[in-house]
Length: 423
Image (cartoon, rainbow, N blue to C red; front, top):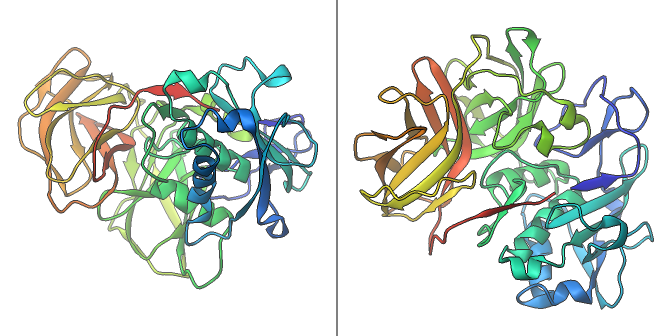
């Protein structure tokens, strides 16, 4: 959670921005302002409380690795400078960015970690403090990933509705392997390195039965079924997807109706509405994006009857078995693996509801089997499948809905994930 010490109100307009950036109003009724670090602030200095070091397997080096995950994104200018470890580091506007323990005013917030940003009226950040709940050390959750998530907030990112994103508002006990594509694109859009990384931009609008839709998630899906970049539509329904590598993209919009909804966001995005509409793709051929070019006037028409179809949970089991644990956490599979995949949620109808993984390397090999509020089938991952997250598209009659980033292909082991809230 990011705590910004100013009054917030519903904005009259939000500047077009990619990804989900921390956006607030600095004057009552004024425009939304996205917060950021000025280029001169880098490398960002930070100091770590010794009590946090004792909570993290690997100590100070592991915390440094969490910061390096963001600064090592090739397309970004982000950099950090460690001021070392000290005793008694306290959160608060003292001119020092810190990683410390939640205590005093900031304790008892019901989250394993949180971040406070202090910024000026123009959105430029003066200081940010990351606070870790001391109980995380015995909780079994990934402290390093929690810190990595909070560093995203420190840099100015809000939560992401992409399940495999580090900025997804829940953390697993095993953590994620690395930043997801959505994380990398978001930070590159916010702090681009230089013009040598030629990327493209897509702009458009999401409309529904009552006109513009505020708070629709818009996704750029590449040829491998990977969600490369996301954005939220503003009160006028406008969206922008920036820092897209050259390639072909299908664009779709989905409602913020869970697992992440506006309650998981802050500032002006918290005021968005969970408008009910089916997942809709931009009509026509995929958009081929070239570096340095802007593609505009795309329209996602989400008009139609409200839908009850709403996938929320996913689970895997060994092939031809059905002992699933369904959670709103991503599932992880390996190249060459055969497995059972289950999707659950609201509005599922036996014999009618189906789903597919929008990754050509993940193919269904059995019929669907139905339970009360979920269905499952056997899938196989191609041995040459590349690492990356995938979108799952669920259909039932004329209704459609997606779980963005619900399945990730990665090499190595695939430990079970459980979740805990983080802010």
